[in-house]
Length: 372
Image 1: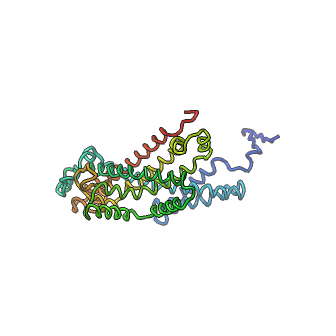
Image 2: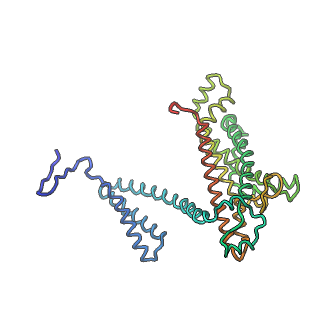
Image 3: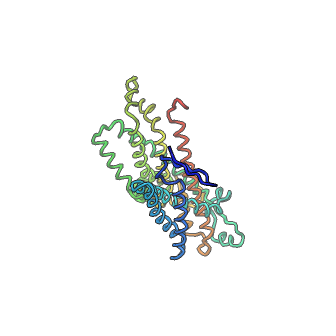
């Protein structure tokens, strides 16, 4: 029976044996607030900056937090709290660059994003128009031709790489049985995963230069270069997704007399379609921002080109590169920088849209459960 102490004007306080020796819920937030204040004070003494403030606050919190918990709950709880705080800190460190990049691109890209920017190209735009923008404030020229080139080249690269990568992964998981051919394919896929992107661009340029001439630069040549980069990513991700499908599902299908190819098509792939779609999206996001291989395979154009098999094409990465490195008006680079940031924002939006489409595809083709 717990004891109570009654004093005049004081409410009786009950202390449960179950909560005795445990830290109060307000302890960690109070320590965190104190670390923020102390970190700001120390940073002000040595030359205030947000980075120093965050660093000092984190160090103080990682020392004071586990120490306070250890004094109340014991050494083991203090060590556990330190590891927990380190995990949280690593999460915050991983999120900060992402938030910073998105915020920077939004802050610099939104002012240049307009209907004219999305529907016009750089054809005929010279430094004269950019110099006039100093007084008028209207920046002419857009990235419509770069958007067309990005979508076209990425489409052809995806169309070529996804079937090849998917079928290769199916062979490795379902048919190779650890044979020499499967081991050789796995080795070469691992090697291709690490090749520099410029090597893929040089390979595609050399291949088509040998067939059609040394100056052959088209959107399709760039798509072939991106295909070389996409195939290893698609193969590795699809292979991992196929391997986590339980063998019991395959055996149940075989027991019903279903052929192997139909089991793969109707059981294995639908079960792993969510991971496969994510892998394809990852492969597209990996190549959609490439610049070096496109410079040597697709060239650079200021006009709109819808034909991927003829003429030079511009993509958003190369458009951003040229706007920054070679401003339309060297004496007034601000309009070019505005176009570059707006194009970067469009590129991020395209990647986000691809992720959304991948999730919708995975949900549409995922196997139905009893609750759906």
